[in-house]
Image (tube, rainbow, N blue to C red; front, side, top):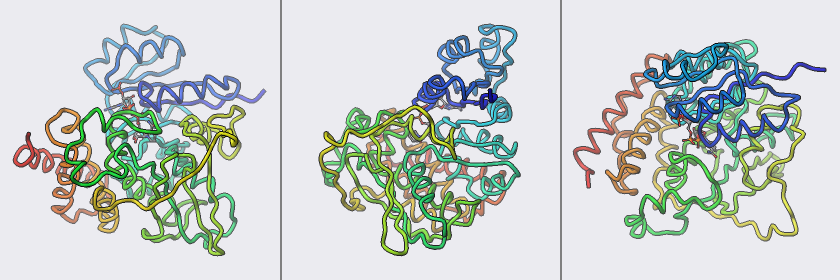
Length: 397
Ligand SMILES: NC(=O)c1ccc[n+]([C@@H]2O[C@H](COP(=O)([O-])OP(=O)(O)OC[C@H]3O[C@@H](n4cnc5c(N)ncnc54)[C@H](OP(=O)(O)O)[C@@H]3O)[C@@H](O)[C@H]2O)c1
């Protein structure tokens, strides 16, 4: 009997976190959860920990550490803050980073620097701290397997070819979100409830709003560039940023594609179900024994593809611009976007202001290189302050 792979789930109370718990529970012979962590949802974290009995539990909000300790059996070690989150990642063979936003960076770095496998849903950490994360990826034993469905698809499509230099383009698919086909004038009137009503995926609020603005797709282009666009590990390809294209595909069945030099395009298809890419990242290079997202081809119907509307959804091109500038520009854009999305969800700005805030912050980028963690943290802070100022001065309803 082979020992089960030990798993840490950081962000266990969220959409990806709870689906990760389901995936692991479906194959108890192969996986054992040894660490859990969340941000602030104490009650849910406690009930998860009581049911699973991991060795280690952490909460991001340090003011709740004492309550967490009181609520759990003494045998379970408890910690808090960034150090607690990073420690989770050191305790397991594989860490699923399911934290939302820049707050996931200590988990990404803690896991890679410990030479462990990172199953990465938290795209913001890779986008904001690209050069620092790339260095951490070089740690012996470190491995980064994407959980984002598009990047999991690309990862699978790239395995179809042995000669890396024969990859000519990557097509990242986008559902188009709830506002696909709307004009700039119509978009000026959309509400929070409409923006949260994603047509094909059920996800946490931040990524759902990002999907409605196409910022999510822009962030995914930067993510793909970091993962596949430069020599990085055994799946590193020397692709230019412009070789990473976005294709709108409203059914969310084709999760992304890779086109090779001979004209062949390899695509990965499944029904929209995040448990599949979570399971893929856990089992790679094997495949999980339980099927998620299987297709009933008799019911599938048509698959449509179209180009994105770059005028109505300017966040997409802001991401290309940030990736072209490089350094801390992606960190600035991602931080500004976190602030703007939060302000939108609080009713402080309109949906269409999100792109304007992001654009204004990015245009003030200070040329920071982001080669060090301190530089990334400073860039993130500066961009948040700038986004707050812009929202206060120009956009309050
Ligand atoms: N949902 C999807 O289908 C999907 C698909 C692809 C990629 N992703 C990516 O996966 C990540 C998670 O998305 P989600 O939709 O699962 O978000 P979510 O439902 O909002 O969950 C976010 C998780 O992060 C935790 N968290 C927030 N701030 C934290 C902090 N400071 N310290 C520690 N934990 C913190 C939350 O804990 P509390 O609730 O306890 O505060 C929660 O467990 C994002 O980067 C997203 O882009 C998601």
